[in-house]
Length: 119
Length: 116
Image (cartoon, rainbow over all chains, first blue to last red; front, top):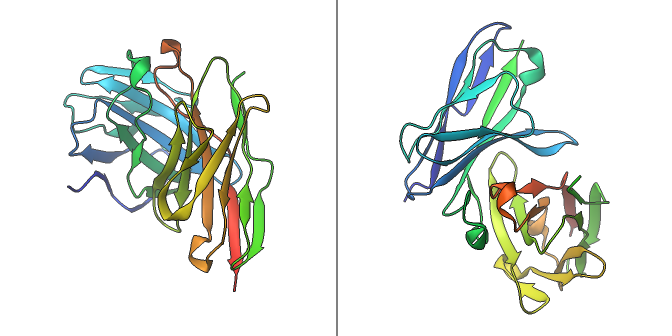
């Protein structure tokens, strides 16, 4: 199993450019999420999905869009990049989540991250 | 507001000594508690979790964590530290009610440095 795969590993954008960060998992996980990691801030949730066709906002959703057309893929789109979006982005998935609190004991599986710099 | 606190930005220990990385939380109900480790340029890896039952849980790489409900704490411990344990450690909490949608709340992380 590849687990959670993120591409690209590194990306440099100019202010105003758009791009999509790709995330794919091969574990048939229902729950997928995107976090950004900034020094001294820990991990902050951007968007999440509890299944194909269902997405919702996390703590810091502004400037980002997501979609979930399949169980495997959960891309993150930056429509107009800003320097404040310079960060390391992590995609994560887990077996259960969403409407089944009794199954919240499943740990998250993380990708290796995308380091994004916006100049 | 629900939150997780890791009061130490960095913990320094000598190899062979015991280590503790502290975590406290402020979450309603009976949350699920997790520890993750992050090595440089990698994603987070799951170490251990507390769901219910015995307050001392054992996880990967010889780590264990002690749950204390009255103090709302979930400290990570290891009896004898290794240089290879040097990494960034995150405590995370998942509220047990449906309104949370299963989202984890992370602490800011603690950098563990183990010196030979």
